[in-house]
Amino acid sequence: MVLKKMLPLFIAALFVLPISISAFDDWDDFEDDGFGDWDDDPADDFRDPDPFDPEADLDRRGEERRRDSDAAMRDLLGEEEEEDPLDDFEPFREEKKPAAVAKTGFKPILLVKGGFSILGQYKYRDGDTTRSPGLMFGSVDEGLLGGEYLGKYVIAKGTMNLRTKNPFISRSDVVNNPLKKMNYNTINDGIHHGLYELYGGIRLFNCLTIRAGKMMPEYGLIDTHQKLGMGFANPNLTRSLVVVEGYIPETDEGFALGYKGTFANAHTILAGFMIGTGSVASEFWETNKTMGIYGRLGYMHEYFQAAFGFQYRTDYFSQDGLGAKDLSLIGIGVHANVSVAGFEMPISFDYSSFNMIQASPFRTRAAANILLSLAPGYAFSFNNIDWAEKFALAVRFDLSRGVYQFGADDYLDFSRYTNDGMIFRIGATANFFVKEIKGVQSFAGLTFLIQPESEIVKTPKEIDYGFMTLMISAGAEY
Image (tube, rainbow, N blue to C red; front, side, top):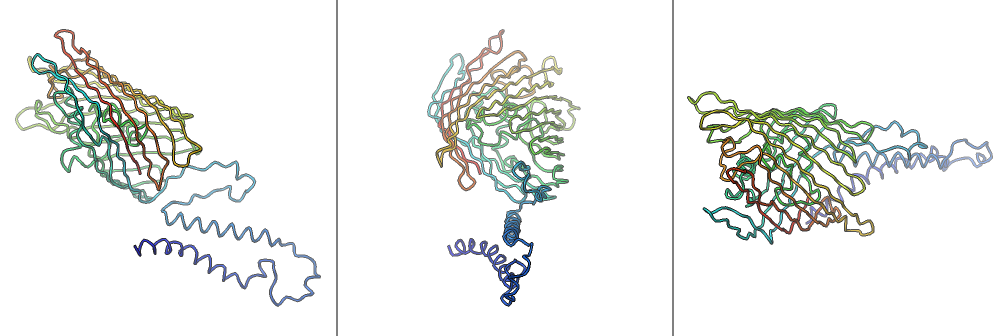
């Protein structure tokens, strides 16, 4: 308790004492301040007035002290001071726009989104009978805990994923997508896979980065989903659809090159390239790793963000004596988001073309998948309430064309996949946000999501039975 009380006083002293000492140093300099010295000759009052303006000089000295104090505070917080060529031109100061300057120093990361399903139901086949049991459960659907350091030349980040299992993704009798289940479960199972991001690197010219470690692939605008956003809490709705469906891994281990530069104080260009190895496994193909190449090129503005992403992945590891294997996946994506006057409209389109195995007769077969996701929303801001920030409404629509059939247990088995099958999900959320308090922003609300059953194969008849949930959701971010 004593340490907590003394620490603010100590920090205050760091700023008050230098200013006080400076004031005592100026005690004998009143002549320089235009007020004269104690021993001045009274006759001096009848001499020609000095053109020096004492009030202007006091203002100048006050401005210098204010700048010194601000510089000391920036140094304490680890921020870099940017030189301003307009500082000497006061009449133009009001026309100047603040520049976007990246803050340096250590920043803790904390993000938690989850809830409790008060009305849940999923369908599955039991022999010739279709069952629809009710489902109530609680889960943490999105969570990050860690920290990030951004220095002038050094960068580092380490985060642990806090997500817990959700029956709508983890149950084998509900989800007909082995990629989706594996991509989701590798994050939950084990210390090695539990590390969401862990990397270090260098920064050059405040815009170029070189990183190595375990990272999110450079692809589209996936990283923009790591925030509270509109408050979606179900795991199917918190992240990019191409990640949720498993067509790119949530993390890979490798190295990445990146560029992020801002010009004219408002326009930001993104460019990234990454090579990494993932841990998607296939017992059918006797492989346990993939090698991927990812890239993106994007533009970001206050009202509009867009990116083009690509990936190339191939299974490369196999047991001895089983022959060479070469199954590749090529994917492209176009992601965008428009946000203005409280309205927000994210849209993503992803296309993947990949090879699968047909066991009898044994040969490779071409497969494809199209993912389309829309999530329009509107937020009403409370300007006259001190503690309330906004009330947000949003809907989300996901469409997947090219899906796994019921009973699929391997992501490379073509016999349990159809290029023409189609499923979709639709969800809605209503959330109330509280204004940031000591760096923490939070929300609470309701989220509804349904994936209707759909006939994904005409002959023979194949049904994806889907699910439904209504959950109380909440989250916080630091």
